[in-house]
Length: 130
Figure 1 (cartoon, rainbow, N blue to C red):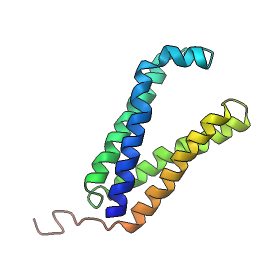
Figure 2 (cartoon, rainbow, N blue to C red):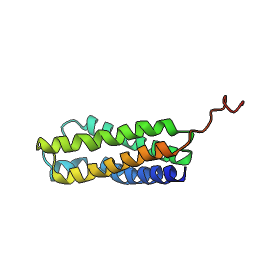
Figure 3 (spheres, rainbow, N blue to C red):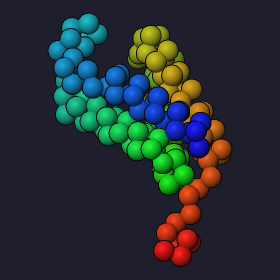
């Protein structure tokens, strides 16, 4: 349980630090990495969903046994980025720097799988006779 708590807490904090500033960087992203964002609804939707997931990671960290099943959805969240970015790089659609960031998500995805298998599920209330 301690391993899962640490992994999901670190993932949640890291994710919030990486994603929340993007709410204020739409214009700069377009300037530094043209072209400008042409569909801001997708950009802000992505950031919002990402922030929601970071909050879920912090919830999992609070009680890994209770939220063990949610760890699997967290693995998908991490691997969706970690797999897509190298493919985009091979298609010359993203810069190498982004591949490096996607490897952080790959590492976290692997740690999430480890946390899942090392965490015992917490018995449900009905199983405890409550």
